[in-house]
Length: 193
Image (tube, rainbow, N blue to C red; front, side, top):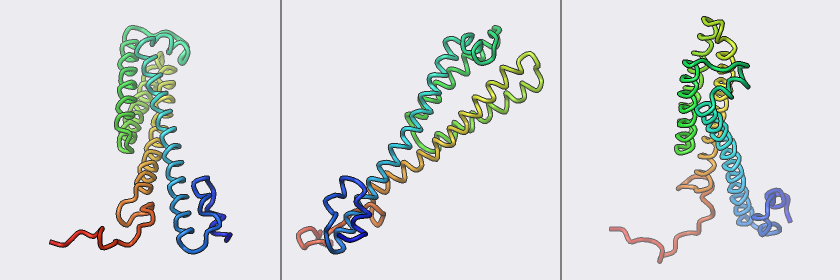
């Protein structure tokens, strides 16, 4: 067994290549390791993205259905009629954004969502600056929106990594992950027109 094959035998899928000799064993082992790493990256990215959508959906549903309960626990006071309406609209926005991000599951969708959250955070900073009575509520919303914006940027990065991992494991022509191809035999070649 050589050191290259032993180093590439990190998972059970590569165990068959351990101890082989020649370049084919090393190449198969390297491709198997690439696919395993790609699958792990995709699974990790999916977990981060799914968690963000689940938190956003839960928070949005709570804001839309029981805004006074959420406000009492986060800002320490119940909402007035106008604040309650705004909280319900914001809750529906969070719920729709979670569904859209889950359905699209692309880096650009998560970046767009992060931008919306950043704008919401900025608007709440403005509200906190001009309205003393709503300052605590506005600053609480600023913190939540900022956290969701940063989480959205993180999810966009992870979704991009998942796309790259999927592309690498699928392997198009000339791309890593393409696997080992055998030379074309006369029967597999198509005649030229």
